Length: 147
Image (cartoon, rainbow, N blue to C red; front, side):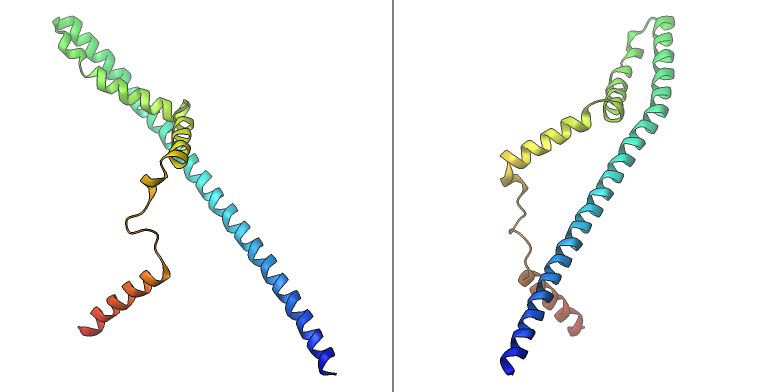
């Protein structure tokens, strides 16, 4: 009789473990999906911000370029055209970020770094472990208890 009861308990325990593994996997998949959704939304906001900034900066750049070119022609001083050079770099960068291929190039470069330059990504003193966190927590709690 004890054997039948034990067999039933083992079967229930096995079913419970399978359920827990399935539930943990489902929870992890949901977390990964949520993190990716948040990342996509943040990237969309960055692109939208860049496009919005480009509208205002483009207007400023256009007015400044026309004004500086007019001033250079009227006063016959080509030095008035010098500020157009750095402003054009900023304008080009913002356009490339908002409408060009800058994000794809950055993604490609990041993938290359992840594949070929892994050592540059290592944390000082390695990964954080539970033990190191506990040690720091105990040291910090000693400081508060000593005061």
